[in-house]
Image (cartoon, rainbow, N blue to C red; front, side, top):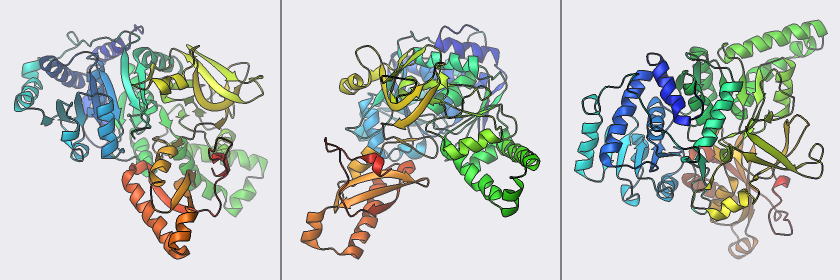
Length: 546
């Protein structure tokens, strides 16, 4: 296989696996590689007839699905730039992203497009349904008719392994603009070039054994690069069959899908693994009889073996390892999984690296690490003794982004004059380039399904509500809570009383949740009596409250 070109990987894998299943919606439609190729050909036919240029920005708005995947490959294989948008963003944030990215065309789930005001996205020339590829909205009737005419095998022509071709990117061409937040004022559209995606995929091919016909369950949001790369692009590059969970991925649904699909490789975020541990394993381990038996050496090994077998079966029983990323795994959970020899590993990355920075297979993984630095990347710890003294983790290399779209200030803050990307994470390394994360100078939280949650954005909204002087949002027992210091001057003036103040905060919580995505909903507001402690720069010392 020629691995020098990103799009060449997909042209080749489609031709070689034409009759194999490529994409399935869980308990729904399945497409073979050949059937997906036919739809891509029809989309390309319209793009050409409509005069959409290479490098044009085309947005994708919807939950994981076969049609989302096919649309992504059609956009990339045309040489255009994909703008994936999280379906959980509120309509104002989605509108802002579509406008900021200068997207000219949109593939959208019907229910999500209904919530948008088309008048506020005038540069979008056409909107096509991710439900069935029907025309949802076009600037004029002529363009709508053009889509309906072009999106047919009769007009586009029949696709076959001999005539299936995709346009190629140059290595430095922009491929994806990935928005890590949607709010104006916090906008960061990460510009990911073709070289970054190609290097991530080639690394995965070299280190994560998958082959044609293997099965994957995709439940991490493909609008984020972790799910996009390792539950979709990498598996497809070797001819796998990807099943998409088209509904919000609850742990129950995920486990049910694993047991039915029996995937060969599993990607997850810590929260899913930790919930399974706490709900399925811990209650059993804490039974008095089992606690006693676990102290008996011979019986302990036997019990651990049974727990491991049960856990493996929970995940479908057919995987070679689970790769956990996105946030640190709870130390207690990691220690127990090591004890029972459960096949899992922990990777580290960020959107700005498309995403991989470090990974190591489960059989050679070093406990408490975040894996070993990946190929074609360099790492440096900003401290006097990187092996022992914690410092900021800096990386450079093929995976690093081009910068933030239309945000030179943020780009300059992230990538220094020598090309080092400042991750904002703190850690050390060892002589073999294993990375050990010791803290997060960034404050990002992780949603249950892998969504990035930026508390500063939420705090900026909540600070506008009645009686809120300042606040800190953090995670407690898997839920987001806001600690609020109420405005003492306003309390002195209006004297609402304790009971009324609490009622106001309940209402504030309800109202601010209307502005927030579903994955970032506040569970409660907790009042604090003293002003938050500050640094000399008057920044809240967040670590005291998180």
